[in-house]
Length: 98
Image (tube, rainbow, N blue to C red; front, top):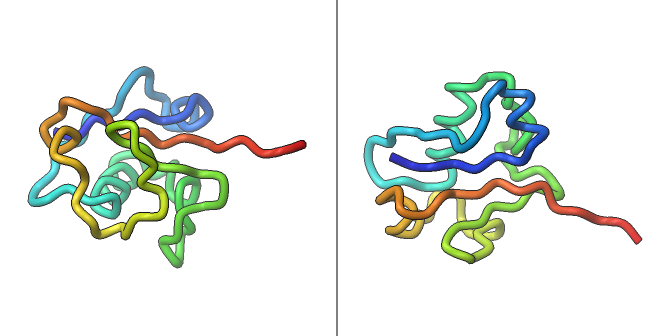
């Protein structure tokens, strides 16, 4: 089971509170987590990554185990603590401005 933490605006869009728990078949990767998340909550399609290219949207970041995974390959395995359900996979909307 993978625990996913969404930013508040995506929780509202998906009509969820708290963490989202996803069951994974096989080794968990960013791509598999996001595919599962979008399949379960189709209203999120296109909000976290581009609907057609699959690229992460600007200002969206991925974190796990206090590490920024945003620039990792989407097919790289997630940390063991995340796949064991001990730590969440965090999707965060980055802030910008000046």
